[in-house]
Length: 136
Figure 1 (tube, one colour):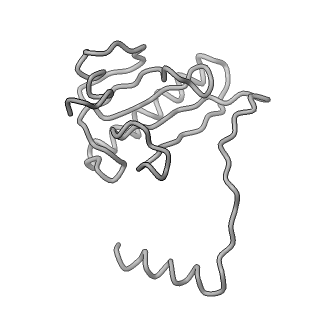
Figure 2 (tube, rainbow, N blue to C red):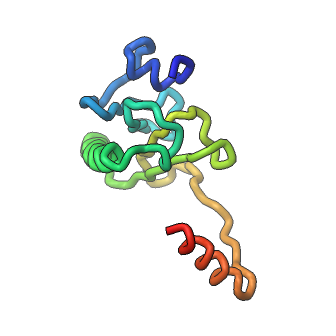
Figure 3 (cartoon, helix red, strand yellow):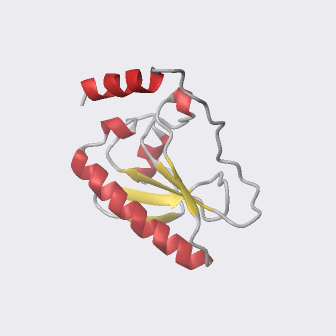
């Protein structure tokens, strides 16, 4: 897409601190990191959310993300990290090109990736379970 910032990075029109690239996937350091070493991993082909990624590309994306997470952990000497993928505006997605965040975590980093836990009303869990299964 012409106006997609990640498509411009893929096309080489915008520079990035690239950590990985193959024919289908690219990864680079986030310019506004949650922690040092924060990487983005994305399919080169434009797709807006997780649900839009072709199965074969998704398989590649997951394998490459694992490889980068391991390299990132070894390079900074720590094995803790969050994998985050925001899908849609309500979920906090800012760039409408599917991408995974690998966010290194450090003891005492004060980064908050938490949510408040809710409870189901009586019968609500089963109702939602059945609705989900209906579309499988």
